[in-house]
Amino acid sequence: MPLAALPGPKARQILDRDHAVISPSYPRGYPFVMDHGKGSEVWDVDGNRFLDLAAGIAVVSTGHSHPKVVRAIQEQAEKFIHISSDFYHPKWVELGEKLNEIAPFREDAMSFMTNSGTESVESAIKLARYSTGRSEFIGFLGGFHGRTLGAVTFTASKPAYHKGFYPLMNGVVHAPYPDPYRPILHFEPGEDYGEVAVRYIEEEILGKILPADDVAGILVEPIQGEGGYIVPTPGFFPALRQLCDRHGILLIADEVQSGMGRTGKWWAIEHFGVEPDIVCTAKGIASGVPLGAIIARKSIVTWPKGAHGNTYGGNPLACAASLATLDLIEQEYMHNAAEVGAYAQDILHEIMARHPSMGVVRGIGLMIGIEFVKDRATKQPDEHLRDRVVELAFERGLLTLGCGKSTIRIAPPLCITRQEIDEGFAILEEAIQIAEKE
Image 1 (cartoon, rainbow, N blue to C red):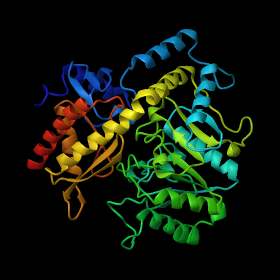
Image 2 (image 1 turned 90 degrees about the vertical axis):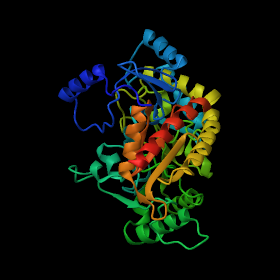
Image 3 (image 1 turned 45 degrees about the vertical axis):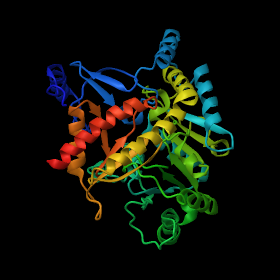
Image 4 (image 1 turned 60 degrees about the vertical axis):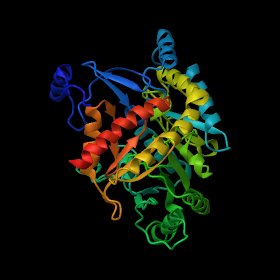
């Protein structure tokens, strides 16, 4: 059943005030005005309860206001809130040591702390150029890497991200991402589509556009996020790693959305048995306190003092929140993401059997996408129906977010329970059923 008319009176007042003073560039969806949250539950300013399957775009990894994270922030705030990166503090070093421990490569790691995912990508671009002495890059169609100038050049999921901002950063060529549901390259039966995509890079991009010895790095999401929660075929990353090794190109994994235990492992790329050279992280690293990092093989972190820096990266509050977050993920929630994520996919496949608008369910752990189509045979995306499902779900007490052209992403806090999945998916199916009949 729908909640009382949304937005409520208090929410409407805040929306009016927001419209008067906040930039219209923010991609707001439905009018949810949050008051407080606990775990996977949130309440708006009018007292309506919602189940959260979005987690602030996969950010609130340990749930809203986890007591251990709150306590870590409070204890650090009582000591000091900020010291710039010109100096040192223990939590910063502890976090660097932890990131070295969980880095998805055997070589020792060094980290550079940032404030966000897009800053992590910008930092990786600079490090790759400095380390290799090369200037060019390869990205992927459908990728999302942020909105600052370098990061948005790699972003290729929607033209709106580029409109009005040309010229972008020079030196990025985009390749097809191996989406097995919507392949755009020809391949023969029995071929791994990911291997075909890498062959395209070798033959068409390196063979006709970019000299391989000018390419500093290949930036790629192990699972595309904004592009539609797309999982590549198994052969993609092994073939991509081999290509990088042949040509001395750095493999840069953008794990901003897919990392931090969301897929049941620290990093999504671990599911493919490949070691990257640089990892970009943010979002779930500190349960909502702004923090990001690049984690790189020590051998490539060759830039000298002053080559790169920032004011807030490694902020003590963020580091304290991150250390508490990583401990909770390691001890409890990474296992929960794998277990409850598998359960969630099973339930979604059962729902899919009853609803022809659901073209495919895909994902790993608690990074799951549902793509809506007008017809399963033609796979024609149904963006309107997807948007309507999101709206109807909100009206019934469920927070979801779209991605790609017609996909809903399921990216709840990693602490979500099976019972909460059942509750949320009952609402989701009701919304789908109504949308299909309209």
